[in-house]
Image 1 (cartoon, protein in one colour):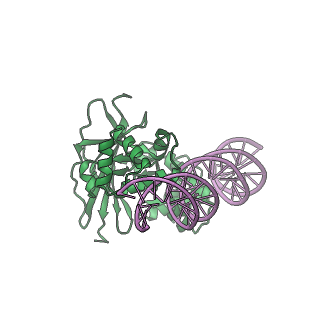
Image 2 (cartoon, rainbow over the protein chains, first blue to last red):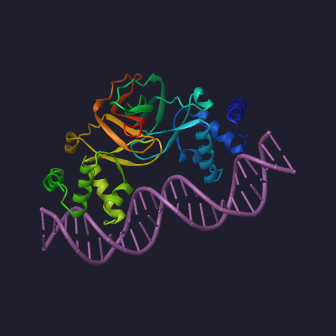
Image 3 (cartoon, rainbow over the protein chains, first blue to last red):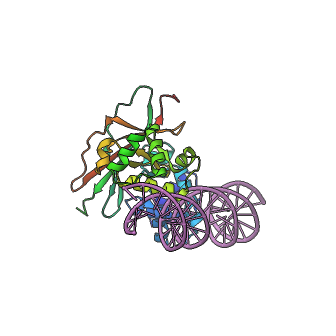
Length: 139
Length: 139
DNA sequence: GTAACTGCAAAATATTTGCATCCTT
DNA sequence: AAGGATGCAAATATTTTGCAGTTAC
């Protein structure tokens, strides 16, 4: 485990460094993709109580360490935010790609979400683009 | 109720015309916005069993009468598809606007989702754009 | 030592399934 | 009449809350 990196992120976010937080954050850092609650339970080997996982994800959300991904099928997935998010601002205006074959959900940080013109009187604070399709491995 | 229109949509979709389907479809036609399961229960005055509402929404989904809207907060909302969808193909590549103040969720059919360039090997089948912000009434 | 975090129990909420009955065609 | 839709009961899944015990700092 990238002990220092994990610890550093937690401290920067003013979260106390506990076992479950270190392990769960490390899982996110290892996996480049978005994870569902049960993915995390599976990868921790059910070592932590389900409630602890919920609360850990919640505190990561509040501190801007992770964000949720909008999906059409009602499933909830979380992914790491970029560095800028870790300071409280959310800059997750990137593209989320969901593979219809393997279910893998990826944040494509490198692709910029194009600007759009909203009708009069509307103001955007956050834009999410969700692309469903086939990933490079399943194609 | 726009009896004929409702009936015509149901028949075109090869669904038998039942009371709950007529009423629920009419609610969608009346409301220009997206609706959650509990919105529908409320607007029918709890006249139908919760299970019936679930199954009705499910059959509308299968027939392409409605579609779900991806939201970051895990809530499930449904909105009418445009006419083209009713024939089975989904052309809901439009923008969904979610007001952070009143929660109203609208499909902005008139705004076209811009094309984006995916990395090599990726193929898109559906693109959703979800914009959070302030609507023209709350502004 | 104190405030915050965790685990357990339980409640609240959301969704699905089975089956007998009723309704649409 | 037959197949599908509905309502009820119950199972399953998901998320939240309260509280006592434990841990980080």
